[in-house]
Image (cartoon, rainbow over all chains, first blue to last red; front, side, top):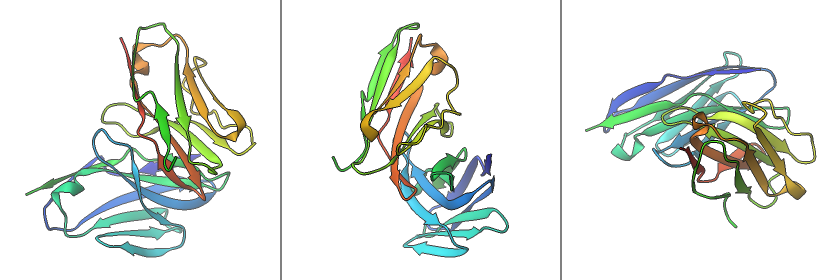
Length: 110
Length: 111
């Protein structure tokens, strides 16, 4: 089975850096995904890690350690529009099924 | 189309009625997922289709819920004898190589 944990809520200041952690336990790991979901909208894909290390994409970076079952999403130079829920999801090698964590609601304050 | 299309976008139904929700995935995507999301909550997995394999129905909350995927493309999620606790946003996603693209969802309200 799959078990994915991430904090429920976080608050950060505009212009700052925030790190959202995700830990997982899974049978048959095949990638760690981060999605962003604004209130009332569908989740949109942010990043994908399948190998250990840091993947950087503009202001967003995602890190994976498979041995520790751990990932984080790093958001730099926070903007008000970054206020959203951030969903960690694990892909299972039994057909690439995605299982989602409960999401972290990030509030960016001026 | 270019994205995942879901219909209807909103559905209000009376308790006890049956509803059908439709998902039209991205062409060529072999994997299709249905999730449910209650207000302020995370995504609850319902059912997963992958190619011609038997679907993973382990997330369906009761036997009132069923889903089909015809011809490996369009999928319908059917909820029979709806209950108020079925009220939620039902999201469909399709994927190739594991990266899922979501539709805009169907907001179901059971009154």
